[in-house]
View (cartoon, one colour):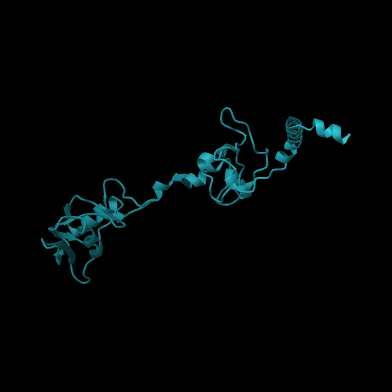
Length: 228
């Protein structure tokens, strides 16, 4: 028997038998191969579930989690905002409570108290001057000059729902006008005397305090407080 085997043991027989074992065992050997480093994977060889044309997917569906993505690495172009859920603590952002907490507006975008105060736009609550009056700080004043005795000037301002300025208010008005200002009535007078203080300003913007008899005509302008 041994003699017969030896006589039939040729190089061709040995190589063909070895090839059979390699083919049979090769699948197992390849299947048990484990990638242990990046150097064992060629660049651009692993695809996800949207592989390039002609390639196939290599990643198990649902196997990649947040742990596989670098922190703060995803930007707006990588996220479909339409698929994001509402932040839990923002659940009430769709409705807004009114000032007294009794009722709710239909949406935060159209909440009355979010757009207006007491039904009025916020711009209505800025200080402004009525009519054609100019503003100096929180004071509104007339540009135009009128002339009358003191009592008549007081009455003219009162008729317009305004008043004569005191010396401090008139000085503020002058700060918003040209340098030279003629003497004008102020809302004060000397007790026991028919003279009334007046105020003017010279070319160097120096205030000039004077006085004039109450029955004498003098320039005057009316003022009022800015309102919202």
